[in-house]
Length: 186
Image 1 (cartoon, rainbow, N blue to C red):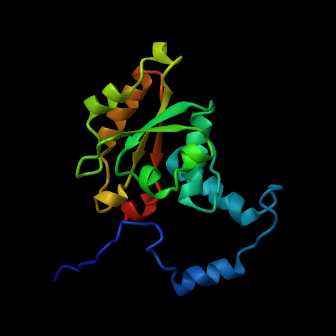
Image 2: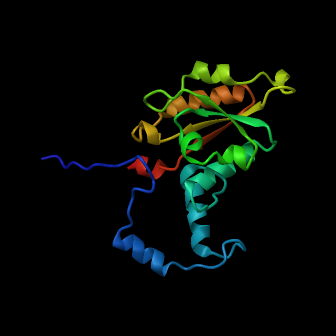
């Protein structure tokens, strides 16, 4: 008999902590994270950076905050534009924070049923920088992996690479909202 297990990838907030997880939280060594003295936060940031192959990690209180910080880092000039899926978490569920707080213009492209966006449609949405006097300047492309509104479907590495190549071709940055990435790895 084959064991069957359902893994719910819709949201990182669906996961409920086990008793072991609760015990780890209750006994974790904590201090002032802002002053860089919290050993638990430091270990978490270091471990995640190592797992993801990045030079550093930053612990934030929510995926929404992480996405907002990422968009603002890449779109550091008010009036910048981000290309993102019309059914993406950043566009639908994050209270318009990129525009309200950052002055960043969203340029939605239709999400396919599997969470991807058509590569040609992304390229068409990229603004010609010569029009920056009258149009927002495209600075960033955002993907969501796994894609919540597509049933938690995972984007393939090949797709992510193709979008990354497109971003490089146009001198843009690529941000991947990976709020459910560890759920998806299961």
